Length: 196
Image 1 (tube, rainbow, N blue to C red):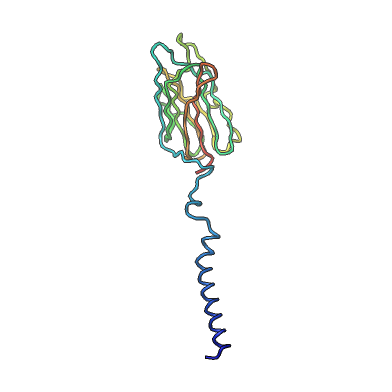
Image 2 (image 1 turned 135 degrees about the vertical axis):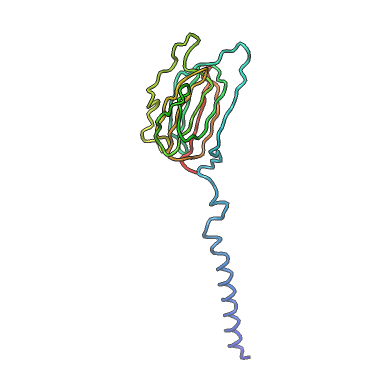
C-alpha cells in the first residue's frame, strides 16, 4: 500500500474512533446525570405522608394553651407556626380531601389544590374555659402572595386540642416539628415546600 494512502486510511480510522468516543462521552457531559436530575428542590426530602408526635409532659406540668397562629415566607418553603404558652402534648398533620371541624365534623371550606388538617395537642382556652386565641375562622393568617399557602382556616378547639386547615397550592412535601421557647412556651412548626 502506498504510504500516502496508508496515512489517509489511518487518519480516517482515527477520526472515526474519535467521533465514536465523542458520541458516547458528549451526552454524558452535556446532560445532567440521573442523580442530578433526581435532586429535589432545595435538597428537601420531607415527603407528603402524615406526621405526628406525642410529647411526654411530666405529671403536674399543665399543657400550654394556643395563643397565636402566624405564617412566614422562606426561600424554599412557606411556614406556619402555632404559639403555645407552655408545653404542647404534640401534633398530628396530614393531607385530607376535606378539612373538618374538630367538634362538629362539618366541612370547613379551605382554598387550594390540596389541604392539610393540622391538630395541635393544646387547647385555645384556659382552665376556666376562656379563649386564649380568637381568630377570624376563614382567615386565621393572611397568606396573600405566598408561593405555597392559599388559606389558613380555623377548625375549632375541643377537648384539649386545636385544629386548623391549611390550604396549599398542591400536595407538596412538608415537615412538622416542635421548638422550645420563648421562655416556658413552645411552638409547633409546619413547613410546606414550594415544589418537589
